[in-house]
Amino acid sequence: MIDILYEDGEALVINKPAGLPIDPPRRGGPSLQDHLDSLKLGFMRLPTPVHRLDTDTSGCLLLARNPKALKRFNKAFEERLVTKVYCGLVGNAPKEAEGRIELALSKISSEARGWRMIPAKKGKKSVTDWSLRTTQNGVALIEFRPETGRTHQIRVHAASGLGQPLMGDPVYGNRKSAPRTMLHAESLIVEREGKTPITATAPMPQDFLAMGFSGPIADSSVAEPPSDG
Image 1: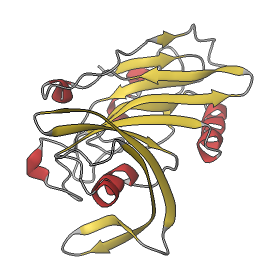
Image 2: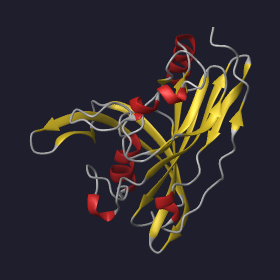
Image 3: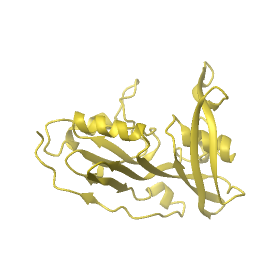
Image 4: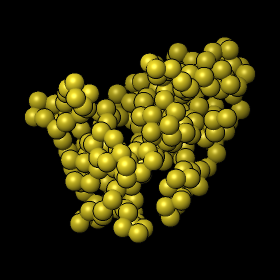
């Protein structure tokens, strides 16, 4: 079962489990696609993911329940009317308590390492604000607030901006430092003209809790959905 953090007539926000890809893997195996039928919740249409979370990343994922809503939400992301907060674990606390990372990012690929994002002058602008929340046994919990939404943005910003890659990151850090890339999409707010904003918070995942970190408890915001018509 996939936990639902927010529901109304045009939107769902789910708590995507770590390790579950959004699209079916080429090699086969489970994905979010396998759960979409159970997430119709009485509607005739399958809900559609509006944005992306990496396979390892847990937490808030917005789904649109009809094509009109999908178009509206896509526009909200394009116009930066969406506020996202992520939590990530790094092996050492940064010297500063907070800061802003601005990097131009570009995609490269090699036969040895596959594709990845790197800082490059000719890349696309990416901006993330960050702050140190707390530390436990030498591990730091960092709050990331991305202003842009580039591929692997937070992962690259942690490694190249903070100088501390996310624990367990197999591309930009050391995959052996944690069972997965330790990144969690903690909260999501989507502004809607003429309607109350979509707001959701995902509880801290068990692997973060096991390392001594806690966070806000999710507030369930469930409204009565109208008929799918």
